[in-house]
Image (tube, rainbow, N blue to C red; front, side, top):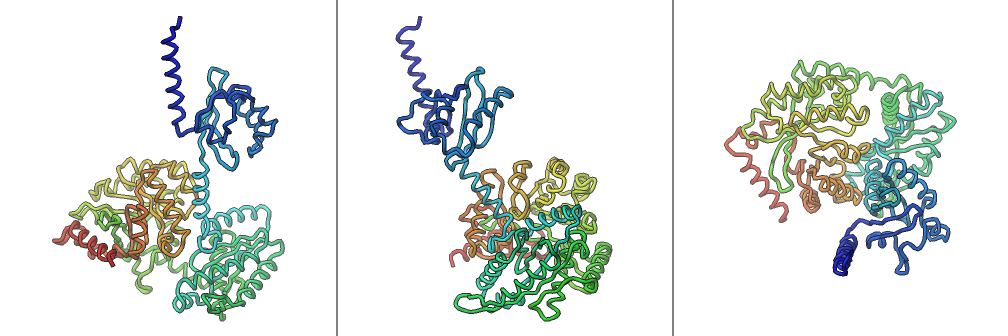
Length: 579
């Protein structure tokens, strides 16, 4: 028989347990199979706004619903509870998200003794809202709020596949602002932003119900025109847009009138794939410019001179390695306080007649033809060989194309090059974009794990500009996240860019993944990043991409050590900060 003291002790224990449960930040409740709430802690009462008059266990779930006390549920509460019981009886656990009174609540339920439901719940509204915002901003241009290149490319690819089946005709319209550089140079970049914003506003009013417009970058825009009657629909859109832009734009008290050059390509006659359509629309755009700007032009076969030049460049690229025309430049990476810890190897092409060609112009060609596999292997070997020769053990970062992930033995190639050059694996970081994971996620994940097993580091490059970065960060333990330079460039002028950067830095901090912000060119950008707790930076403020001989002091080839030069750089940054 239980004595009075024992009962008192038991009551004290129960009170202690209840107090502990009430101090939990997670909502906890116990429900019977009739839906009668038998117990709830303080967090549960707060989450569901239970009044002080609430009586625990007084009413079943059905009675509460019948008395309209669950009217703030987005889902039918009775149907929800039946679904919950059915699932629990089948598998013993139940996880879902429910929306109640504008809150998004994560629910995890388990069945106890076949007759009670233990429910733990948490308000995840802020996290879901932030994730949706980051996802939206990653697929939309922050200045004009139009879809960006990634969004447009995905939609165009899908529409091409659909149209091959339905034999539907549609058009791609590419256009840009005539003499946009002059507007920026004469009136400043803020004026240029006003022009682009107003252009986007006028464009949106003219689009058909199914049309899709996007800003690709700078003053480059494109439209997927899917009106039933083509080419009449896209011609009408081009005419209306040209007329709309004849109206002056007010820019800080000045009235500016801008023109557009527009190129149009039709599916399927002007191209049966995305690359051909976009290239031919661009060819038509350049013809419009050549004919005097401020007009639109449809593609025809006589415009393929540009395509011919492109093919010649591709042919020259095939011989670039053998002719020793390719070279690597190196850009330093540093902590936000200025301490150099490594370099990124960046590819350059010294063409015998065209001079120095930027990678933006020839890397896409290399990827289209598959030459990127051979070029990428050369880059990896050359950068590792160079880094292995440095007395100072700095890191070396190298970009890997999604095309390289399609080759049979990327992991074997990297392993062999590390052995050949003698570079320690922990000094090598491979940078990949989200495009690596898009086409064959399972295979790419397997390759990434194989590379990681070699002891090298993997960085997610251009974060925030692609497909579904958040899910990829969950799937693979990246060592570094690199914020794309397009966000860094607008840090002090665009609140949306700053919001994205802070969100990514916060995400990295939560996942314990270091962040590198690319494209840091000003002290103001560096200060913003430092205040946002970004660990590392890269850009012209630290150093331009140069032949490695320009950084021989950092690598240890000269008498000054890396530490001494880093101290010198830190002193410069401190001086700039004080200014």
